[in-house]
Image (cartoon, rainbow, N blue to C red; front, side, top):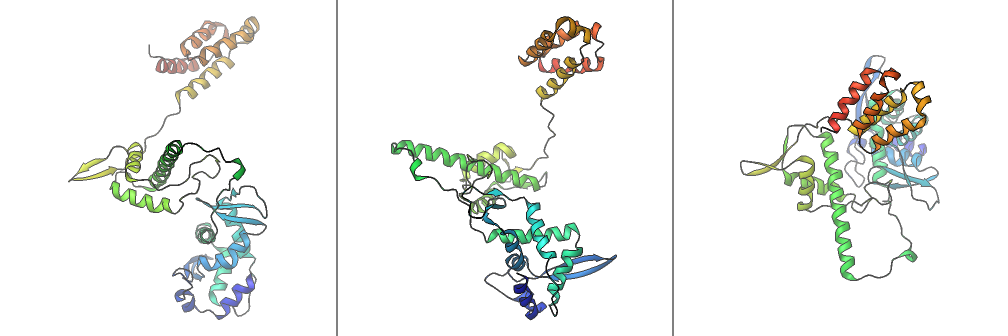
Length: 343
């Protein structure tokens, strides 16, 4: 592996690295930055991520496994296995590439980019080095074959009427388009600026271009029943966008979406109430449990399970004088019961 890279860097110059072409304009474009060397900034110029991915990244990641390109990352399975591949975490992928980079030997007469590459791997900060490793892993993923699940022909269902098959196909396509639109919109909102305005047509164009790249791949690679990516039509996309971004607005004759600030969500009331009842039940006095046995505990829990929080708390209050239960718990529990059962 390093023999190929070192042979390359003995003949390359800085100008060759930054200007050469190999089928794509970014293949040999240099990657530059600064390192912190004993408190002094030190500039570096290393090979393009695509070059390092070819000579170092791919051999490091493919060792002993079959690699595939997934919708959100690398997929791997044991070499020769017929099992579906599993998602490779970004941390594991970066760690494998970094180990290979740090194992590059010192080469006498190597060009500066090769020496800078070894230096970056040795003393690069987590942010600087992590960004470079992510680009290498992404370059490896770009050149991998897509994973497509195979089906057993013997398990094919019997023939059905054409109209029924058409209805099911349209329903599956609609589900796939809606799920794809929702996936993209959630990703978009993660980096969107609250308060900004965006054109619906512009959103649909961006979503279509992004989703088209993964057309046919499962949206959730961990779920066998996951819908696949499918470019949504404008009507489907706008319907999903209206449900996520809110209704479209209009100003100066043009529609737009207003990106709102996400509201803080309170914990579900049933979860809070369940914790309260658990604490109330667990703090019953020993003498009450001894007198009534587990039937009292079971009765209170059954009242809660049926949604009758008021009844559950009433049973507890009947034993309050003998239990010494924390009054703050009861006050909070009463408040939750009133909110759940306002009558």
